[in-house]
Image (cartoon, rainbow, N blue to C red; front, side, top):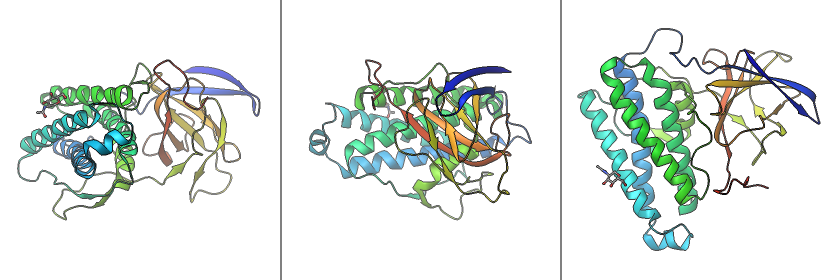
Length: 302
Ligand SMILES: *[C@@H]1O[C@H](CO)[C@@H](O)[C@H](O)[C@H]1NC(C)=O
């Protein structure tokens, strides 16, 4: 077990333990079938595909220009949207009859800038979901999954760096998300799905709320609901992309200390285990935290 010690003014010296992330090999318990995993991937692809169609229909080139997005941004979204649609077709073709169909969605964004920010979040969640799910697939599907994963990663980097003007990735690793974690993040955008869609073995975890724009290394209050007895010891597990291990810190008086060296899209999960978060130990989250650095390496909120 690796253990990093960081000092914080508020809490004195605090040990930050790093633990194996969501089991990089494969999650414990019975593995879902290939069909289930492919339908789960298709669920996320439908969401992305619908999101690009929706935004592109809503905002014209002049809306994008007026929002101050870089030249060609809308055209990039057209191409990314087409690629997402190709992923939908690919997975639907693999699954044949019984492939999950698109749902109706709601996207709480009101302008092209917010649309571009949310697209960065979606692409990163897609990357995390494929990273987490690939090891559960049978051999014949792994190349297809890796291939989509790489494309989603390039899209995420292009949207971040070219369109949103921030660093395109946060660290050497993509944080693997479990199906339930990725679905928890996708679920606020899903309104209603066809009743014929296959049921996915996923849970939606309670929400975890951080204050807006927390800085790396700061100690901040977090909000979540739990029915655990008061006084239950809880931890916050951070999936930072700095390693394939989670960084785990105690929750003290409803506050957690964010790891110092965080960049890009980071996930935080409240867990009952000092060993980090699995679906079994999750109390709330993931929450998405964005630590945006400019292309010159400057923290956006400095
Ligand atoms: C996918 O995106 C690339 C790069 O923007 C674009 O050139 C290509 O036409 C797209 N392909 C499809 C099938 O949508």
